[in-house]
Image (cartoon, rainbow, N blue to C red; front, side, top):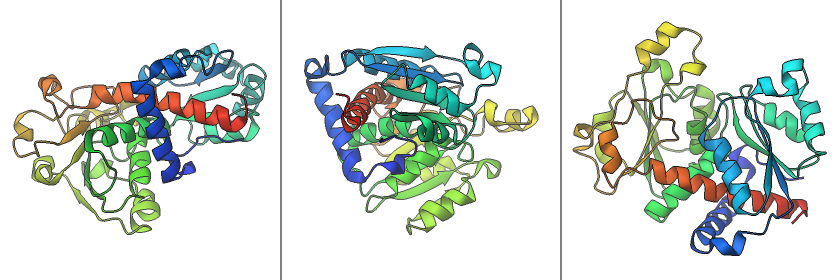
Length: 307
């Protein structure tokens, strides 16, 4: 049984196939509108979500399928103490594929080891968010036409940002990619990501606290919010939450074809004035996420032999 728990579960060739399928869905939606008729997606969301959960649901409906599931842990048997393993075994009796979000790192992996249907990691704690990375990849490809020879600035919460960790892993496999890591000292990229991905693959990167100084060299700027839910100390969150706020003034020296991405939700780290700038890609990113999740559902169900 094939699952998507970590973005590295898929080869670059498979990622390109997903991008190609998503682009075909964009141009020929009717071709795909009945491919999942009679199939059910179970959305098991133990942690709040708007974009990811609704994106999965929209994706399955637009493929002609149906959706079951829950949107918070308190409305599931987890509130009674049921294990993730037992939940996965149970849901396998009802659905054809699972999308799971969980606050604990590794929970979707446990689910995949016990389910008899494909499991998609829709975000596990501060660890991974591979389907957001799929949205990021399609956005990068549609904006830049390539994945190689790009300088990518990652700004904000690089410590707890699971979207950042997944994107670094995915993009580290392409030639000529360089990362600029922009964050407060307290929210720097974890050393294990640098060791296991950047240093292991000899990927060039720089670390800085100065967004404006880094701006002129960037092809992609990936903004993130400082996540209140990952902090144990409210004082630390309040001190760091406004570390980086992207305004039009800070884009003065940016490239004319810079692509500004953000996994959302936005709090105040990108001024709403930037929304009208053609370089703002974060709402395109939201739509691209639906198309890539459609492509992913099709891939996993085909490999499971159920469509």
